[in-house]
Image (tube, helix red, strand yellow):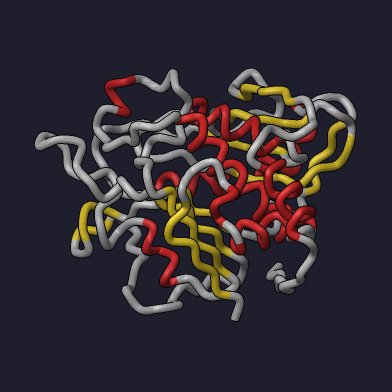
Length: 292
């Protein structure tokens, strides 16, 4: 469901207080729940869930991990978002060192979505209920975390998505794209850029309004992963020299602000980040959005 965002002018003090909070973990205690073949009903693929422990009904969001990665590499980001009252679902797709396209993963994600209605309530903490009318079962929003569509403009992975025509995506929902400033750079002469120019977060330009765009200027493609992610994976991508925890808090905080706006109709945090990106823990540049 598309949500319009009205621009209001509350006091700067109130806005700064609100936005600062999303860049730090929320007040809710979190439980991380691995779900695999021992669960009944059995999910189509293994899933990692980060859920609030406090009894209540919460919207659901799904995180689809990056190429050749594992869902638990994102655990800190998942817990941060969940602590604000969201049930985070992270499927584990098949890992292959050869990029064969996203068709199989898309099909697997659809199967996980079908499983959620019966399967998710059975694994959540006591008293916690998923609100699937705001989130997965009826998709309400889309977020791209430094998305990559291939190795170049002419070598997109299947299915090809980018058309290089402005506002060409036929996706009738709010979209958030978070990019990285160093993703386009090579780590060294041995490895190509992990988020090559023309097939990376430029996805934003093909989105229809309402859409939002933030770039973490001084960080790389994998800097949002947990610190214990294997070095043999992270060494392939250009990374920033600053604290990775600040990157994770920035990414998670922006996601929280966006989800609060589109799922909970609480847009104050998102508006103030757009108004004053310097309030974020890391440098955000560029910052753009289109509402119509």
